[in-house]
Length: 487
Image 1 (cartoon, helix red, strand yellow):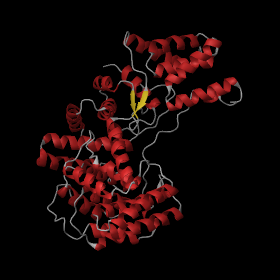
Image 2 (image 1 turned 90 degrees about the vertical axis):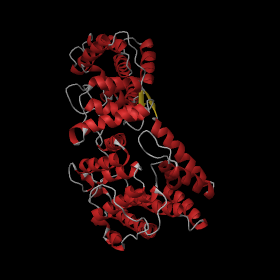
Image 3 (image 1 turned 90 degrees about the horizontal axis):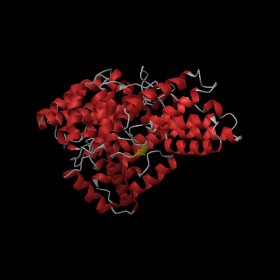
């Protein structure tokens, strides 16, 4: 089945046979993994100096290693300057000052400190320090007189708005304001507030209802949230939204039991809990999908339910077709579809990209060329989290990063011109969106478009968007790599 919306009655009953995949033993779904692509651990330049943290020098180096890893370069610079004020010959402090100022965008100070270090016997032949010096000198000359914003970790517009709506949902369910919940959900379904990434604020509001305000959960935390949903369901047993949240909560409990490890590292006991909780959700979904659907939240929840349960392709195709026929502008359907079609979940290489192209073509027919391009770009945006950060190994990378990231430009078969058109129109409509500018900057850089990436860096400044980067240090390294490339 392709991705073109089909005429399917939303009152049609979902075939019971489509739920039979849940009767398979838990081990049958253990092939699938859900980890994002992660970088290998970075060796800190201070690691070798932290063997004895009981000494003042060792404690200082341990502190610098921590700040380097977290990307708090302003604190690193300040601490190094204090230490150098009492001992100007402290090479560890000078190294910290050079590195912190370098990552923070003060290339003049960095070049000065690296040069001072290379004049000492310990660093005169140090290839890493000499490379840092070369880059700092190049950047201080290339951008003479320009000041770059210090690196600071900030939430992007999408994360900030999502957190706001998620907190609202969590507060209403905790206060048992069930009528208000229904009212807000209905308003956001009929007249949705759409974020720059295409997501509806209805989605984080709904997450707040069944999941509270935090993503990382223990089973005890899940039990607490689940009890709130069960109380709502008991008070409003006919509420479609309450039943959706109850089913989604059971699925969330299954994910909590499973954890984020690759499937072959999940214990048999955990898989048993996954299966038990999925079995609780199954009849709720089956009943809901046989009724008239009034919210896109049901289809989105069912998609994720099926992915964890190892549902057959026919399940996903039918749910997706029904979803986009009734709510074609709900971007999360297409995002979840693309995740499901990743090779890690059983899709073929290039499959999610081909499928997305069909969906974007259908959206173009439905709502115009701009809408089709924006849908394409927004799903690519969502998929970037499965391809690591942008600092992949190449000649322009910094000496000690040691990255092994999987870059989308190298590993995904995306339609780059269409992606560009989509992001250009997204930013035209949302010119102050840090979230959109950050992702687009990363993709531009990955495709070798350094001039365009630097233009987007003017919007981003020193703001390390928390959702887009593993740490502020990742952002700092990326910023330097963008700045050092020739046009």
